[in-house]
Image (tube, rainbow, N blue to C red; front, side, top):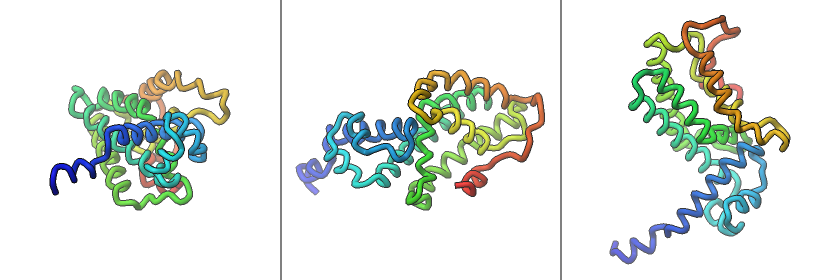
Length: 212
């Protein structure tokens, strides 16, 4: 393939920027308003025309898929960086939880929508990478005596999803400014020694998948 042909086949820089703006806007609006937010509203927030959105993503499911892949990849990158750079497991876990909130991890909730292919090989690969990384980080914190023994990775993600999605109703959208404050309270409750016994049993990712 000659240089000119290769250049023609590469996406233009402005097209790539538009694509990322659409993904970013969709991520925010899926968290704020749920998976049924009008695509026209997503295009408007991204600052692009409807035709541009549909050129990149022909339907809602295609956009769902890319948002989920993007969020999982970024969150997995965050946990791997925290594990490599922080001096102990719980400090790394704390850093990861706050970073996951900033990445709008609540945007993964479209995975529960009807018609979403959760057996997509790319989705499964990113999901497994994320799960392995977080489980390893929690195991490290637990072995270092910093993380209570009666929780599992699903408990962590349930809390993240609940604390990073606003309550129904537009009047509650401003509550996101309290997210990191309440995440810090939650993290304090994860530290060992535990102050109380939790009801039920630790929640795994498999438990979450069974409830989807």
